[in-house]
Structures are given as structure tokens and as C-alpha cells.
Image (cartoon, rainbow, N blue to C red; front, top):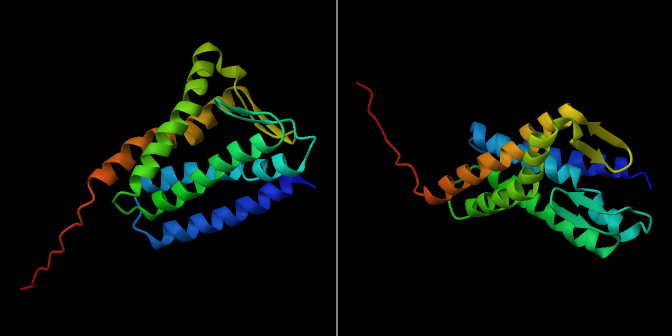
Length: 182
């Protein structure tokens, strides 16, 4: 099976769902940026849960501090990351205050630690050693990978942790004001 095509198909479905969600909701920079970060991470993790289950030759899974050898452990860890990303993508894209935003804040905080810490260590030590690897098909090396990871895989979760908590705490509906024209 061509896993790149599988991931592309799943990513297309995710993108259409994300687009539908953000176009129906009141948008802000934070809601679009954070939900886009979750979309990208879900897309990057779309093939690994299935491949870990059906492909005995799959080399394993790595996402920041998370690692799994072949088999069901890949499916469980990558599948958990994927499902958390899809749920948070929808909640963040909906941009509605309330308790659901704690999910965005909490998952963002976890992903910030899981991805942000290794990214920061790599940038401080040698930014040219960072790499984004999409299976055996594509590797984005060096400084470009460091910049992309910072903007797309660390930044949204930094914003999401703070923004999600603020939206969860500030869950009062805004008052409706009616003004009469004179």
C-alpha cells in the first residue's frame, strides 16, 4: 500500500472538515492558528495508526518525546495523538468559550512539552540537525525544519495553551446590546 497516498487522502478529508468548521464559526487569529496546528499534526499522524497495525515492516513511530516500536504500540500512541488532534481541531476551530476549551488548553500543553522541548534543545544545540521526517518518503532537513517546526508544530500549542485556558475561564456569553437609531 502507498502510505503517502493514504495520508494524503486522510489529510484532504481533515482539511475539508477544518475548513467547514472555521467557516461556520466566528474566527480569530488564535482560533485559526491553533486549529491549523492541530490539523497539521493530525494530517502528519494520519497513516501511522493504521500502518502500525497492518504493516509488520513499519520501522516504528516517533513524535517529539513519544516513541513506539512496531505493532500495536504504534497504533495506540499515534492513534491517541491523531484523535486528540482531531477533537482539538474541531473545538479550537469552533471558537466557542466554555469547558470544552480546557481540552484545547490541556492537549496544547502536553504537545508543547512533547514537541517543544526537543525542538528547543535542537535549536539551542544545532538548528541544522533538526529534521521533519514523513516516513521514508520525505525528510525536511536543517534550518528549514527548525523554522517550520517552530511556526507550525510548537507555536500553535504555545498559543493554544494560553488561549484555550482563557476561553475556558471566560465562558460568559457576551451581552446583546440593542441600540435605537435616532
